[in-house]
Length: 305
Image (cartoon, rainbow, N blue to C red; front, top):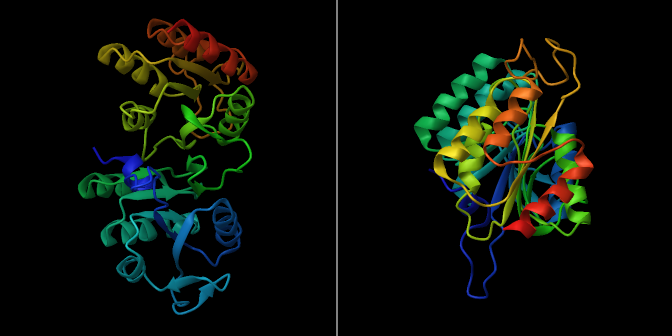
């Protein structure tokens, strides 16, 4: 499996510090892309190049070189990470271009990407041995080192807890609560709210579970689908013992109603909060009734280890 940590932070240098890996921004000159590129740069992310066809040779903020193609950018900066801000109708071609150029971690921000386009990119990701987070994701952050996404910086702090979340806003809220309680984050991954994701919940779990510095995990799921049930069974099967706490959004939602995300629809008991909470209980994962309880439950799990 491609190592998301290695891609995001590289190896430790002689002083024991991780390196700030270069990132390419596709759609860097667009309104949305330019705003969030500035915020990523302010955080300290190494934005090494931007890509906007027809604008090669220009510079973003007088410092970041812009290229016409991803290959041109990678040939110069050697990046393995790309973040996509292009409109949904251009996502397929942008993702293909990045993967064909050798990108190993693709963070796909656009929403409303056609499912067939997402599925085509997922197949290419598998062929290339790469990782795609998204579409419709807030992104990925290793607090204190690198932010590749649209999440605000303030909720996150350096620590040893992984947070995996389908919801962007809940990712921010729960991470903020964890930070306030003294539980900094080792990594947070926004799965994305679409029915088909490049990185499923179980994939994200497998990416982080063997991280030596990891001490615990928070899984933020939501009604609809079976991602949480599949993950819970996997945790049981492999005997994962580090503390995990869950939260399921939409537990009070009316049955058979789609709530917010396209992936959040419940039919009968399939995809219901009750189904997910029951499976989490079998995996010894307590589920908070509200976001503010997550840090309290995690503290209890950590102290009982």
